[in-house]
Image (spheres, protein in one colour):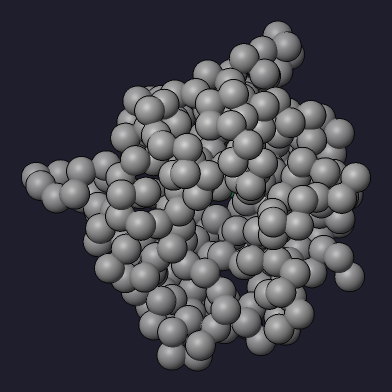
Length: 259
Ligand code: 13P
C-alpha cells in the first residue's frame, strides 16, 4: 500500500550527547555534500545536535543555504525564569530551530520527565511555532507483558490532551521501543508498522482525519541496512536515528533509502 502522498518521509538525526561544535559543523557539511536536490525532494532531513552546537550548525546551514532542518533535543516548558541550566522554546525558535524532540525515553528514564511534563513541553514548542517530535515507546518488560499498545496509547493521549486538532496535525510522532535504542535490536518492520498503526488510530480518535497527515517515525537501531525494509511499511513515515546519524555517510544512505 502506498503512503498518502501528503506524508513526506522525514529522517531526523538525534545526535544525543555526541559531537562538539567543530565536529558538528563538519558532520553537517559532509552530509550536505553527499545529498542532492532529489534527496530533499524525496525526504525531509533534520539534524538535532546538542544545545551548545545549535548556533554553530544554524550558522552553517544558513550561510551555505542548506536544505537541512535544524532540531533541538529538548527544551523547558516555561518561556523564561529562574530555571538554571535550561533553555526555552522561544529561545530556540529565535535561532531558527524548526523541530524539538520531546519526551525522548532517555529524558523520561534518566531525567524524570513525566507524561505531564511531556505535554507541557509539546504545548510550549507549538506555541513557539516549532514542530515537536513527540516520542513514545515501551520497555522490554512491557513488551513481554504485551502492554505495548496500552503504553503508547497512554503516552500519546497524555502528550496531546487538550491540544487543538490543527496543532496536533502539525506535530511529528516518533515510536521508539526502548529495548531497540542503541542495542542493535530493531523491531521487525511488521511490529513497528502495527504499533504505529495503533498510534495513528489513537490520534484519529483524538483529532479526527487530520491524524492521517501526521508523520510517525520509527526509532531504534535504524541503519542503512534496515531502513529500506522499515520504509516499505505503509505506516512508517521516516526515522529518528541515533547512532547511525553521527556518521554523515551512514545518515546520507538512510536519507537515500529509496535508492
Ligand atoms: P539508535 O538509533 O542509536 O538506536 O537511537 C535511537 C534513538 O534513540 C533516536 O532518538
